[in-house]
Image (cartoon, rainbow, N blue to C red; front, side, top):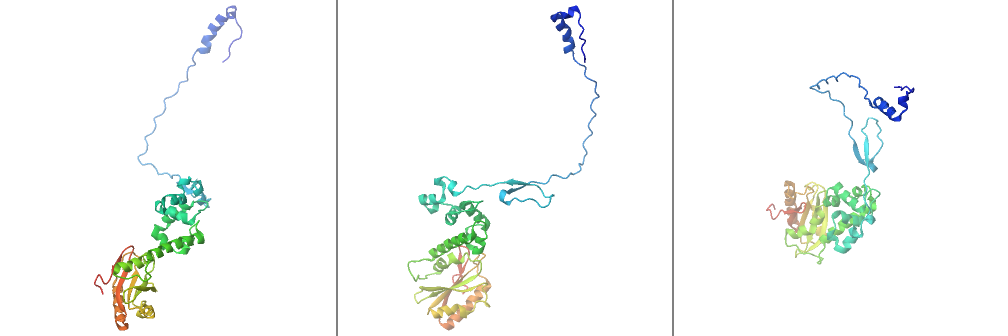
Length: 306
């Protein structure tokens, strides 16, 4: 819009100029007429399914990698940080807590952390202990793992795996320890107390024999066989060989069920009866056969099976 710059005498008066200019400056500009918007069509009853965006995958920073296929879904990096033991407050560090409150105050993961001392770039020693418990299921799973299985865990290696197995074996020997070099056997529970700490964690059936003197005192514990307990594998000759060498008056045999269920099988009963017959011929009595499960046991003699 242009304004005429020619002014009359009355227009030279500023007041008149403002009054005349005001209508021109503030008069509203008429809006152009527009047609009403067209009505939107109703949505279809059945929508066509469209392809959705691929989901995001959350991974830790150490596990992230560049997808080889461009069609692979995008990966959202999620960096996890595990504080080291030194970064924890002094009263929260496992070793200091053990010294102050005792080992019983520590969690299982913290006990493992004290054993292995250090972690790796991704996990602290305690965090690595938590990972071991999750990886093998529980304490029993860790105790049953082989040295190679433990060493293959990232952050452990052979040295730390050996430390864990040494601590487990130390616990086994402590459970078997007695002030008497020749503990007396008065019943099935005494046998279970001696052998269960070791047998309950073994993944293969293992047959052991307890060699007793005339007063039912233990003069030796021998491993007879490892594998399925069957008449074709367990031969009386192998069972009584150590008993003859040690001049034992009687023996008790025991084996484990890796499943954890100590219920004797028909094969267990058949092998036991065969050993009893051989013992009668050799003059070395078979007093009992103990089947060990996971924290429980069954005596074939108490069950009346022999």
